Image 1 (cartoon, one colour):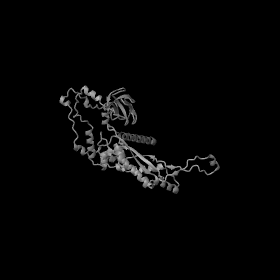
Image 2 (cartoon, rainbow, N blue to C red):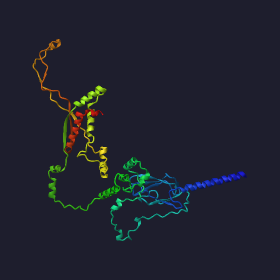
Image 3 (cartoon, one colour):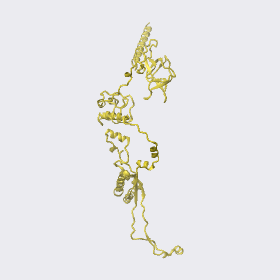
Length: 430
């Protein structure tokens, strides 16, 4: 008798635990409860998707599914993708079957219920009718006329809302770089006010939050870009018709007129002779002291690198998109990073010297017998160097081929190399 009572107590305890578990499981869910079905609409699988086709359903009415299961396959004009379930549930009703085409995004294609709901007593909510389904016949001409588009006021753009919207898109690489650089967490990101399209956080928003730029600057920049994104065609006038003789005269005009109108850059060659005597003495000292032979090309390459340091941007070089963006935001990082400087790569060649003049006092041919016997020959004297000849030191011609506008900059650059190789060659060893 005692064993029967004990078994009944254990069964009651297990049933109570089961009820509590079911209550806890049904307590944590993302959809509404109360035997009310949830509409499942055509999802937007890309930002540009407006409609799609249902290739096939992987579930049927009455089937249960779990989070992560593939519910159906949707086709667009670009790709075919699977739609996965976000929560556990049951398929209560399917309105758009396999092979349905041209379904607008947001249109109801099915109804889902919770696990354990009675499908027979389930209340299916009606689909909300969009404004597109309203008949146009009942509307008057005044109602059909679109209201004038209101331009955003300056106050709205200058004074952003204090409550920032949560980000629904992935962060841009530039934004993510600034967030990691300044060790910002997700709570701080939610406090930032995005000014990009579709509530997207931009690089300027992060800089404004950090105080790098003024808070009103991102909104002002957004307003300026918005005004420049539309073409103003109000001043365009229809061109008058041109008579045939004028067209023929323009077609038969000499080609030189067209060539003169095109701005073709002209290139000039800048050369400078530089002595390497001081550099060779430094090479000799290093070889005698450390036993290391430094190539001549290595020292010349180092001299060119030193001459390029902190060199201002030339007139012909155009700024990159990053430099223009930093200049718009007012960030002075170009001089620190060195991206605005120029970079010259000179060409070198040996300087041609004239051979020394020699004087020959006797032109008698050499006798082979005297040469073999070791007899001193008196037939020919060695060539004599002219008294005005002096041994010249080794020099190289450094040259640059640049545009005419950069001729002065090229001369300054070659002057830097000349000063390093002739006066400060030891600095290249550091």
